[in-house]
Length: 149
Image (cartoon, rainbow, N blue to C red; front, side, top):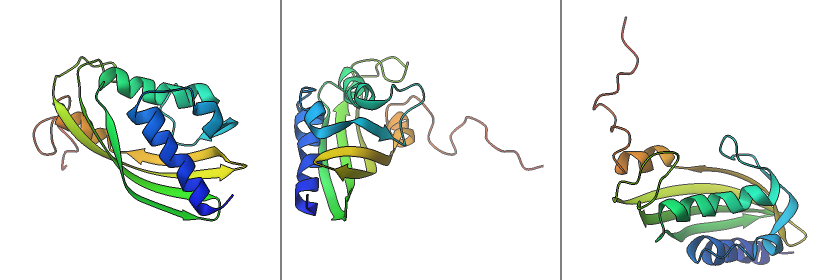
């Protein structure tokens, strides 16, 4: 498959799975041997792990929507920069809902083989998201930190 086809697979994941909450296309988009090198601790492997992430975000942010800001491809890899938006009306990462709106960024690299995503490396800005929700203080506002000795 070419770069544009690989990018289309990722776009379909964002539009159908993340933005619409439809988990049905996951087996069409991801290999059963999928490996997420950036999976959260305790996340199940393979397709169950793929299903867990959008389910977690939609449970915490039912109105979640991701905009693809940049998408680039080279060889069998697609690099993405996305911005997510949502209102925290459900528990998130074990913390109670705040009712606050938040916007967060995420970058990822996806390797595609035989028309399916087989690997992922990425970094969402969870720290910034938790700050916007008021669940952790912004830098310099409490919480201690390293002490000069």
